[in-house]
Image 1 (cartoon, rainbow, N blue to C red):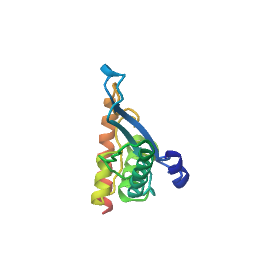
Image 2 (cartoon, rainbow, N blue to C red):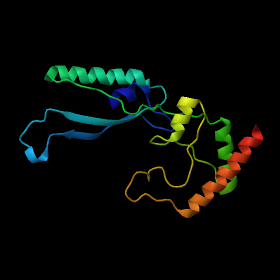
Image 3 (cartoon, helix red, strand yellow):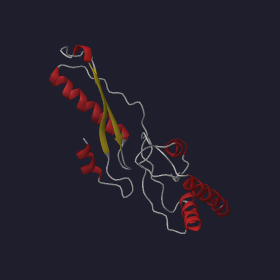
Image 4 (cartoon, rainbow, N blue to C red):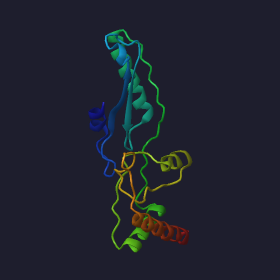
Length: 174
């Protein structure tokens, strides 16, 4: 499925390709490993890019599960607990322009544009309310959700300064 989505939609310059990652598998009981379980659950973390229609993707996944289940005389049930499409805020959007300028002023370096490999509240604000969002803050994007998650205090101070300058620049441009 992942290879097919990549073939169909390519790779996004900031987000990369679509990822389909099985993350959870539950079935049976370790106290009775000789018993074939009556139920099993497979969870997948799917990270899409702009251009991937989530309704079509869900229909394809459901069709795929039903086809495999029919071959094995199983009864599949596909559910989507969280459906958050990707966000792609244009580089010339006023919020991006203000934040990039603030980053340059505060840090003395040019901003590096990229994508976030996960989801944030910004996804909800953009998708549901049409509010353009940018993810920016202290710490590396690969640190969250790990046992030793951390952020340096100096990075918090710098990010706070950038936020203040960005807010001023954004409001001045209005």
